[in-house]
Length: 431
Ligand SMILES: [Zn+2]
Ligand SMILES: [Zn+2]
Image 1 (cartoon, rainbow, N blue to C red):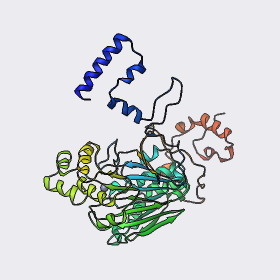
Image 2: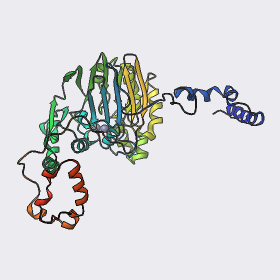
Image 3: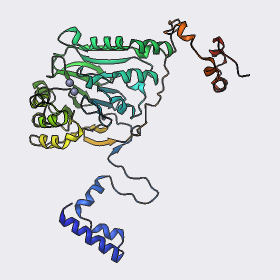
Image 4: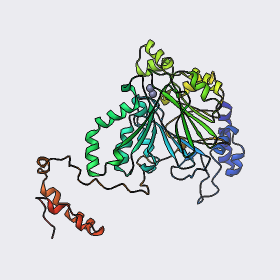
């Protein structure tokens, strides 16, 4: 507020108090700059017991997409040192035909994905730009969490090859499953094995604009990126005449500038300045300089790229929120087009008519709701991962203490024939 406006405010308040002016009259004299934000928020409430007008917020689960519409939700926009309020890279793309594709699934991002309350059976397709943990480490949370909460089918992962076999996505997933073998074996025995499988589609990281996915009217193509070593890629997504781009980590590269051109919606990383990395991360000046501006894309470089591409809407991510103001100013030194500095839970609806930006509002403790499909039953004859020695340590009084609750549950759902308790040495029926 300027000094002049502050003076106007003070005199208006005084006038209001003295004359008892009605609120309508009072509003007439509000400075223009104060009225605008109220109008921008979607209108006014017409009475004390009516629906509030639409604001710039998205309530998950309340909006059906039009056939030719895409909704993109930022489920992670930060750095590898995820915070409670900002997870590492993850963008969920939801298409009007019902398809949902996850682009990167960085550390901490599944907390945001789950807050959208989408049944896990619809979250099975993951595209990984590269194998830094801040772009795929929360695969474990989707894999195991979705399995426990009802996903009936395997996950499918699309990711690039590497210069050698042990630097590629297939190797990473193979060893992911080896690292989590105990988790797999125990869940496979108790729940069902199928949702624990991961189908890998590894593609050549050197391929330029090659189709790696073509299903249900959605085409995803891959282009190489330049970041830390061979392997990283970015993705071009085409659907219903819309061209959308998800850029993984990269320094400015020619493939991106060429193939993202004229897209309706372009996501690209943008890093904080060297000075910020010195101050926030305690990095030596030389490393800070290379972090932002050799392995990654700085604000001015991001702006230059977007000025060349001229997207319908540009999105910058991969910067801690406390650096956003500085980043915005540096991007604006080279780009003056439509722009969002992405924050976690920012939402964009994209159609031929344009891009609408909102923030998702979801409860802290929301999680994926059950979907219509049931999981297959446990596999018969599968060996138990528990020995007789460990099973013999079960303490009867603790188990028998649950009998009333379990008897009731058993009667309610006709589970008498499936009662596992009589086979136990400790079992003491309640009656
Ligand atoms: Zn990276
Ligand atoms: Zn990264």
